[in-house]
Image (tube, rainbow, N blue to C red; front, side):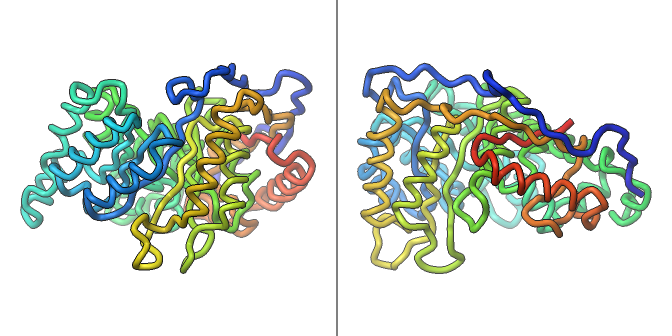
Length: 383
């Protein structure tokens, strides 16, 4: 049974002059140190040599390196060597790990050896080794997407509601109940606390439920753009969520196609980077995976993609005439509290458990109308 909502279901608020966002003061200097946006490539390859090759290719026009390789995250020596090399090249770091909970790592040790257990001590030593050059840990991936689309919640829901079958939990559950359970999903995982205790930010990327990812405790969420979705909608959702909760945000440009060539055209990638920047993104990252074709030593990026990234750096990030956050919210769509709807289409799920309800069509209609009218000048928030 769903909770009855007493407050207005959908409303929009026009911001005439000030908007929600305060743009950064753009320094006239053209050095990396003065750049007001972290720009980089996510490395998803397998070897130290591949990572070094990529760093050498992009270090002249990026200031961030995202080590997002599953194979490398199992190898302490490789992780450290790549991070050392990136820092020596003048790049800040974000490092991906899938698990840091000692209990989970102990269980994995039984059948995977020591491939994971070193991660906790590595994180604990990261600040001493890299100082402010390491920004944080990319911990897990797509928490909202996995909740809505891949039933990652089933075991957790059973624990949170103290039932043996998740279906028992949702019989009388409300949207508020599930939102609260989602926000507490990290409480049983000591890895979150280890990251925070060592003065590192929690990063992840997602394609739905950004608002609730921040409620879970993430410091920075990168909205996945590049799919055949509306860029202005993704920016409205991520910027609105981050602004209202006083968090940082960014975008990670991912696949346009499920098969080769995977990435969008360089021209479109450039436009997505520029739109992210002028909309206020603190981070702009390109997801460079998989290797295509097999002879491409840089992953999925072609020469033209590197040229587009360099042009973005020169034409926008270090160009004082292009101001980060110059595109501000002029209108806001306010959604019902804890309304965990995927919003990718009018038939999307609500918190994975429920089909669209009587409010969904109204919200979808208003969203489409406002996006058509305001484009990237729209924010979407919750009561």
